[in-house]
Image (cartoon, rainbow, N blue to C red):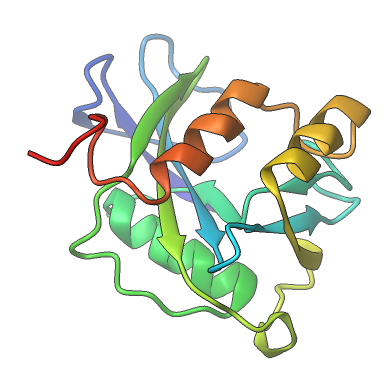
Length: 174
């Protein structure tokens, strides 16, 4: 039984919690996290979800993602998810999300990393991840359009590819 902290509309943690997959209180939100890992060729590491996942079974997704558990920060949540799903250890304590998006029941803090990982060295969480591979921006967008990838907006994928090498949203460093 996984307990999740609840947040107000301003992304501020409240003193309320909920049990995952149970009814979520109205006007309170949960926190999810995602990370896109890029190699030096500019490709994103993507994972294929298992066929028994409740949401988006058997579809490809970003490198790692999941819910932030009660008592965890966003950074702690993504660090745990990355370790659980791919066996990759990264200290996120000094890393901020590149972008935060919303969905009807929550917020999603999204991170990027530049790492040249060897796929054969990864330890996949068999209950969640079927396989992983490197894919270009164009390949991922084609997979979205063909229904093989979680149906993110193609423009979101474009934004993640732009932000992977950026420290801010400006054309020049200040």
